Every structure is written in C-alpha cells, then in structure tokens.
Image (tube, rainbow, N blue to C red; front, side):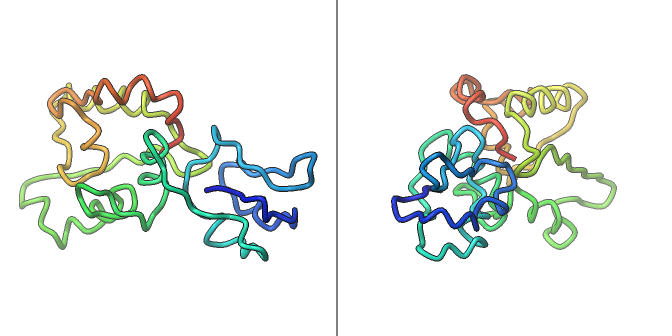
Length: 168
C-alpha cells in the first residue's frame, strides 16, 4: 500500500494495520514502514480513508510475495488459489486431493502481524521433506521451492528472505 500526499492525518488507518506498519509522523500524516508492511490491504479495505490517501500499488519481488501470502482474497498466479493456499487446504475433501487411505495436514506459520520469515519456513519444509512429506502442488508455497523432494526454496528467494519477512 501507498499513502499519498492527500493524507490529512485523520489516523483512521492506524488501528487497522495488523502489523503496526502505519504511524503518524512529525508532519501529522500517516506513513507506512515498508519493513513492517505485509501488503495485506486491511488498511485499504477497512479504514474508510476520507480522502482516499491509501492506494494499492504495483508490487515487485519480494513485496509481491508478501501480498500473495498476506491477502486472503489475492489469487496466486500459478495456482489461481486465493488466500495463502488456505482455500486449497480447506476444500481438499471436495476437490479429492486426499484419497482413501491417505492423510493430509497443514502447518500455519503466520498471519499478518504475527508473520514468519521465509528462511524459517524453509527450515520447516526441509525438515518435513526429510521425513517423506509430499508438498501439495497447488499450495503457493510449493511454487517457491527449487526442489520439492528436499523442501529447499529457490536460491533467488533465500537472499531476499530478510526483506521478504513476515509474508504469511
């Protein structure tokens, strides 16, 4: 999200930010801390800004990753599944992802405001892969993996993990 020069400092957006990224500056206008913002759009969708100062913006890597995992209604480009893979996991009884005799489980590692770093996600996915877990092909996280058999995330992802933290 972006707060434009239209901001009048009404503070409506501040309590809506689940990650505490919005604050009122010395200029008495709202500002977004880009390191804390998880691109969840809660401020944009709920604050009812009287001057429409909060605006969505075109996001680049790694911010675009934050948006996919933090915005429940945002569809992942490769899977067309919205909501961090949540819909894909919660509808598996309808979609037939798990066949008779199979067991599926999900691990929820974060939400906006209580997010998790992708480097920690990689530690978990690699540990799960070691014990034979197969990753759901339509889960957006699976698309970040360079090797689904090891749970390793793409090398191009790992250096950016510091700046792509709190994405889920």
